[in-house]
Structure formats: C-alpha cells, structure tokens
Image 1 (spheres, rainbow, N blue to C red):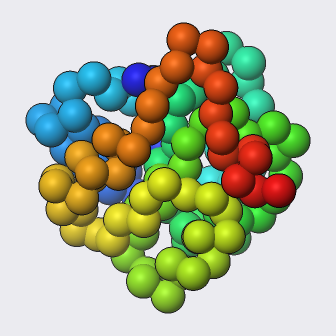
Image 2: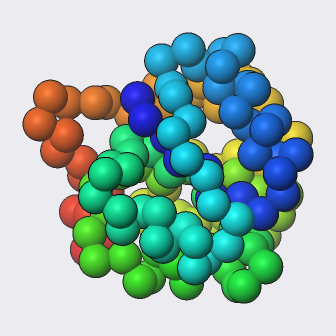
Image 3: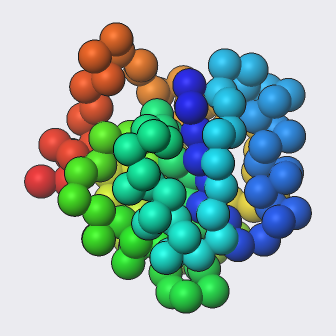
Length: 131
C-alpha cells in the first residue's frame, strides 16, 4: 500500500513514518509535503498515485480542507492525523476512514488502515462517499 503524508512538522512526518514501518509493514511512505500548495502538486502528480493520504489539518498556508476541495478526483483513502479534536466533524464531511490525534496510538493507526481494501482495479469509494 502506497502512502503519502501531508504534514508541515518534520518530526511528525518521521514519527508517522516510523510507526508505519513498525506496525504496518505493508504500508510504504512514498512521498510527503508540508503545505497545501506542495500537497496539491504531489497528489496531482500521476506518477505518485497513492492508496492512502495522511493529512495533518493545520498547515502553514491554511487548513488541509482547502487542498481537498481543489482536487478533481479523489482515488485514494483519507486518514487525518492532527493534534486538534475540534475538526473531527468537519473531517467526516470529507469521507475519511480515520481520524487520529497526536500522539498517534499504534492500535488506532492499524485499525484505520485495516479499513482500506486494495482491490486489483483500485476502485475507491472515497469519491462516491463525497457526493
């Protein structure tokens, strides 16, 4: 399973990457970005093609919801990773399959990832859930 991380704090990127290596061996972080602008460019790159994106909510250039609103096609699953519980309801509006608060509980991380089913044809339901 290919993952990207949209997170502005390098220590948080490294922490999540380490947790994934330790507890979710089938997940490989292939890229990360630290802003809405960089995240949008990364996600829109057809060569990246992630299965799941881990989004921090509060980024230096705004809230990550602004990034998601600019996407034309969401063909990956979404997991929010944030220090703020107050955005949980808003995150549900974006059809996320997980909402993890920092510090990340490895059991909750594994639970969120277990809800992702990678089909051979990569037929995600995220776009349908957002309609």
